[in-house]
Structures are given as C-alpha cells and as structure tokens.
Amino acid sequence: MRKTRQSGYRPPLTMKTPVSILLLFLADAAFVCGQTAAAQAADMEQLLGAQKITWEQAAYFSLGAALETAPANPEEAFAFVRERGWLPKNARAEETACMDSVSLLLMRSFSMPGGLMYRIFHNARYAYRELKSRGFIQGRVYASGSVSGAAFLQLLSELLSYSGGAKAGAFAYTGTAIPWFAAPVGDKADIYLSAGISAELENEAWKPVPDVHRFEFIYNPNPVMRFEIGRVPFSENLSWVYAGLFDGLAARSTLGGGNLSAGAFYTGLLNKKTAYIVMSPEDRQAYYDRDVYFSSRRLVLGANWEKTSIFDTRNTLFLSALGQFDLNGKDTKIHSQYLEARFDIPLRSSFNIKAGGVVELMEQDRRSTAAFGFSLDLAWLPPSTWQDSLTLGGRFSSGKWNDSIGAFVPITAQAQGRVLRPELTGVAFLQGVYTARFHSAASADLFAAYFFRTDETSYSDPGRDISARSSLLGGELYGSLSWMPLSDVLVSGGGGVFLPQTGKYFKDDAGLKYRITLELVLSF
Image (cartoon, rainbow, N blue to C red; front, side):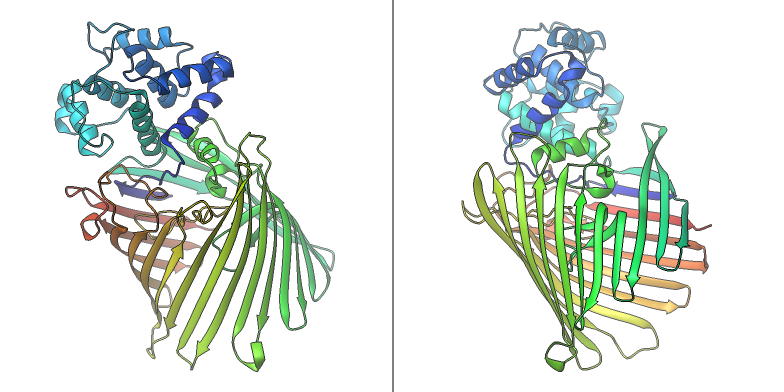
C-alpha cells in the first residue's frame, strides 16, 4: 500500500500551443459526443476564432473536457449545466459568457473542492477568486468581463493538467499486488512471469488497473551470450532517454573485454502510466484520458556498449545509440534518434566522477531540429563506519532556442527531483544527495536541488508569474527513511518541500509545494 500527499504539484504540461491539446482531446472524444470529426473540428475552429464565447460554447467544451461521458451536442450541454444551477439563472445559450460564471462552471465540471468561502457559498464570485489565486487565471482579467475562445482554451488546458495529477493537498492511496513465477527450462533457458493489479482510490472508490510486468523467456546458448524475448527490462546508460520494461527482443554479449546489448521494442501494448511516453501533445492528451489504457505506439531500436579498463586504467566508457519511430498514424509524426556517451573516472579510493552527454535529432512536420543534454556528478565515499556517500552534480537539457536547436525530448519521460518533479525537457538543475546505511536494516537519504529553465515554453505551472522571464525556478529539500525489519517486509517514508520564493518564476504569493510518501511492501 502506498500513500502519497502532494500540494500544488501537477504533472508539467508541455505543448506547442494551448490549443493543440484541446483539439486532440475533443477529436478523441468525438465518438462519445456522437459527432463526426469534421463537425468537432468545425466547432473547435469556431471557438478558437471567437472574441467572446457564449454560454452554450462554455458549457459544451467544459463538459467535454471534464466528463468521461459528455452531452452529445451543445444544446444538451447547455441544458445539463442550467438544470444543475451551474450558470446564472437568466443565462441564454447565445449570450456572451462572463469570466466569474465561467469560473463557477469550470470548478463544477472538474469537481474542484475550492477554499472555505467557495465551499460555503458555491457561487461565481468565489469560484473566480479561487482560480485567480491558484494561478489558472492570469493577467488583468475582470470577473465581469467576457472571455475569448483562445483564453478559454488556455484555461481548459491548465485545468486538464491539474485534473490529470493529484489535487492540491489531497492524499492519493494506491495498492499493488504483483505475483511472480520463475523457473529454469532445461540447462540453458529460464522463464520469468509476473503480472499484477494496482488499485487507486479515485472519487471515493477504488479503481483497479491490471498490468503485465516482467514476462520473458531467457536463453543462454553459451556463457557470453544471452537472448531475452517478451516484456523485458532495457535501458541506455544514462537512463535519460529510454528505461523500463518493454515488449520485444533483446540480446546481450560479452566480447573483447566489453559488454554489448541491443534490442528492438514496440511500446503500444504497455500501460501508459508505467511507460510514460509523452513525446507529443497527442501523447500527453492520451495520457490524461481516463478511457485510454495503452501507451503511445512507437518502434524503438537501441544498442549499448560498455568498455572497462580504458587505456589500462580503471576508467569505464559507455556508448549508446537509439532511435524511435512514430507508429500512431497521426498526421503529425515525431521520429527521433539519440547518441549518448558516459565516462566513469575513479579518483583514488574515495572519489568517482561520472560525466555524460546525449545528442538528439528529431524530425517533425518535415523539419529537423537538434537537441542535447549533459550531466556531471562527483561522488565521495567518506571513511566512516556507515555505508554512506555524498554526490554533488547537475543535469542540463536544451530548450527551444531557435529553428535549429530545440528542446530535448526523451522517449520515456523521467521525473527529476523529488517534489517539483519536472521532466528533463527545457530544464536544468544542480543537486546534492547524501545516503547512509546506519543499520543493517535501515537507511536514509537527504536530497537538495535547485531548478532552472533553459527556455520559456517547455516547463509550465499554473502558479507561474505570467510576466516572469527569469530562468530561476527555485529549490527543494527532501528526506526519506527505509526500514526492512524482515527479509520480506519493507517500510519506507519520506517528505519534502519545494520553495517557490527561492526563484523568480512563480508569483510572489505562491504557496509551498510539498510531498509526503509512505510505502509498505510485503513479499510473499
């Protein structure tokens, strides 16, 4: 059982424009609404060009974004919200909507709890104040003013990002059971099977989600060769681009004092929550769609090479080459290739340097852009009786700088940090990590980091100051403890805080973001 509390955290939303994600959402939901894709696109185009949206438009698009089963057309959507008192009593379908009542409509549609005054009165005034204070409504926007189509879509995008993650200050409860089976098959083969079910408490009800985990057949024709087929673990050396369990074939070999591994994989049968492949706005929208289980469909090819004792020293060189090809069948396809290197350099007996870098070439809309990232870590093993270590280092990923250099986009998104947890796209950070095993059954770690933006568009947060141009996001602190009293029982917990006031990106009155976790693992 795992219990997580998050405040202010929402999965980062990366889009070219605020329109793209809404367009995909509504296109995917067209069969629910009973409209053709052409009619849906026409409605979206009309909304986007509207200087002032109507009550009917606000109702239709709000419900379409927030509800799994939305009304079939704008007329039914307007009747739906009017019957429930989510609009002013005298509102007419074709009349211009005002911001404060649109705020109430959105908070009702997305079932947002709100603050004390909103919970007491549930009216437009406090709904507007709530969205304004949380940073969803930006700039000089008056409560009684009209709302343009573009501004409404931007607001919907922010709320979709919010609803896709944990609500502010709310506990998320998850439980997972993963039975597994492993056995030899003759003298040269093994089989490993594991599948499970996860359950998350959502809207006061447990929602079970089945999943296949490691599920592979392993064949060892000789001591230096190994083949794996099924759902197998695979990663490149930095674990920046591609890491986890994937469906396909992998081969590993020891040749000439080095280790070589290669694989070919298909991602379209993976659980989207565990794969977390969000390379495009379409991928991200599908990730937040409750009706979608499978991940983005992509073919991934990769090869890794590790060479120890470079030049008769203790240094180790790692090289990787990867490529992914978009099989989603969308008009906009994203293909990308990566070259990666890492160099480990031991210094005396207590220090170790790890330096790595990756270069990406991405093809999208018949245009090619390059991106890159690099990392540097210095690790120290103190001469103490504890098994402890201190690591200082940093990561850097390019942002969208011009038509030639774009934002670094990995295949599987990897959350960075412990509280803010941005993706490594247009983001850089410095970090320090101290770990210690002070008892045979107990360990602890302390983590500190400071985050930066490397462009002005890749990272987004509703609490941002819309006029801010600074690259300084802020710092965070996190600590955790793990205790294994028995070989099949693990208890762990941690907590930390992100301090927006240590940067210049968030609003001056932005609140702290915090994260608390508690986990119990039983193996039997």
